Length: 255
Image 1 (cartoon, rainbow, N blue to C red):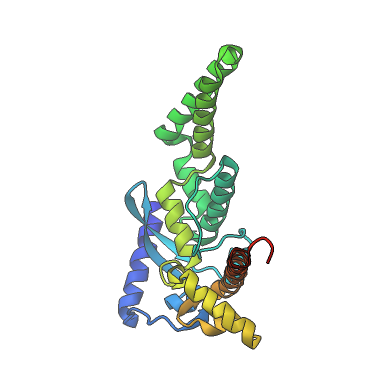
Image 2: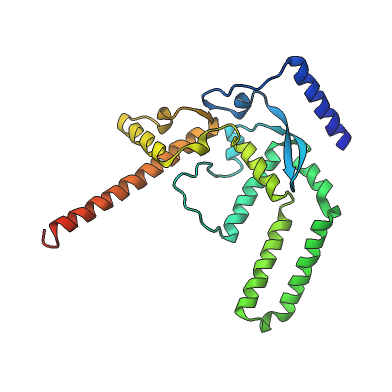
């Protein structure tokens, strides 16, 4: 299997040399990833626990990405916070769906076979989880509330690590690749620019993306429009509350 991947990689590189392949100038506007990157399949160095492994990745379109779940790459205005266990599971499920979508050589399932029970790290974690569960069940009635919380957290952490076969750095990299984070300028958009675009769009009956130029994926368009209008609504609501507060202060309780 590894030999086939290497042969395919060599063939790909030879073809690039013959065709005189060079870096593609990303087109402005809202385009499919394959158009922005210049072709549908790419051999990319993907990190696996800190070690780069060349994999052939495909460029998904907006419809395929949306079928994996609903997540935004635009974080303008968001506050950093701790995610709940259920939110982490939802996020990991989304990342795994994207990984299955973009991995072509090897496929996600082929990686699962390679890792499988033969991975001593996974085998050790399974063994540890089984031991913790057994001790927890045997001593559950005698555990203090704090001790119970610590053990339950450890079990959930191990379950999370065993439930998803790809390392964290791999999941993060493939998610960013699938979403076009390496080529799209969506992540650089500020709250101010989105609110300004939404304000102009509202005034002229257009979409916020009509007032935002740059290199974006086709999926970014709906994401930017929705995010911009949401931020504009928050901005107007905050401005209204501040104005009402000033009016009450100036007029006093009796006007």
